[in-house]
Image 1 (cartoon, one colour):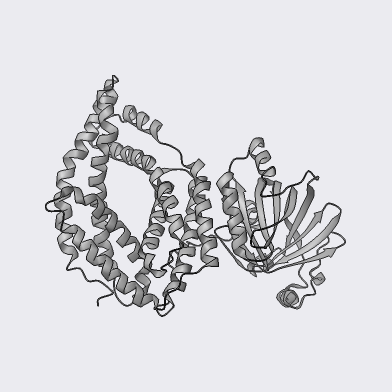
Image 2 (image 1 turned 120 degrees about the vertical axis):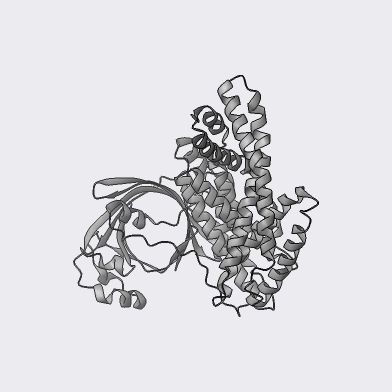
Length: 489
């Protein structure tokens, strides 16, 4: 069984590569790198790919090695799948070289296939073997080269951490340490997958299933440990999407997935009295809050685009000023990934535990959180400033309920979730009006009249809408107590 963490190099510059090669954790020596040239084979009708089998023959300096990989799983950059390697004499394809009984069974229907090269990889590899602090041995590979498929080329710039023997948590911990120091990001795509995409040989991608299967009678600690790992993998997926396309939409989706995970962590704090995850809550919170400035400026840009259209104004002056103030998250993405990989490793080593079923724990905890939510809402009448902490409670409660909704398949959570979404949206717009003063008031006194006028127009619009939104919030809040709750039905 192959278990490896694949990390893509985010900044492909000579200095970054030197820093990676010289990193003490990787123990790369001055020995010349291996020269690798691999040929991947399949039939004309892609029979091996459809069976989720990968077959390659690779020249490693002067030796040839045939490899068969079977179906496994790849999530969050951690690849786990059966693998067989056999020394061969050349790159002539021959499936009969795999004599292992399991491999032979998998290949039995395909022995007589006519095989052809579908893609190639050519790269040099710096390799080392390191011993983790828990005694696990990890094979380190730094790959630099390219994928070739149907006249197309794509760069290979990656670090692979393969578990030779020991605990899979070791490669996650090592990956976390590397991401802390270097611009690396987990990659769940293999070289073969990238080559198939390059060659146009991948089937149409199916929409990702965002529903986590939940078993009501499962131990609550075990269930939430798996849920957390699943959420971590979703965040890493969204990190990659934002890195590949760093726009406001992908940034918003990343923040949502991080917020949802933080809400789940807070919800489950009582699962383990030792609370081993407490160590990571603060750095995760700090990372999230560091992105607030980017979120705020992008929100103001969105509002201004809307308002300028309504007022029939040329939006350019204020747009340019706001756009120039937006910080970029790319440098902080590997820091976020480092935190996530540490949490993942901890959950593998120390799963949460509770002598209570998932459903019993969740329903009792939801009722407690709901009572706290309603109590916080009663403060609004006399304390308008209480809306901000209430908004946070609404968000956290909604995100947890979205995650746990499959626990009540026969009972509709949609009405409650829809109302919470509405309340969150209204409270968010009120918060944005408060936030706008901090960013826009200094601009209203700028010498550039176009900027000053537009900043004043946007600020006036948002502040004027705030009073209406507060009334609207109270109207919807009154509905909350009478809205059915699935755990009570």
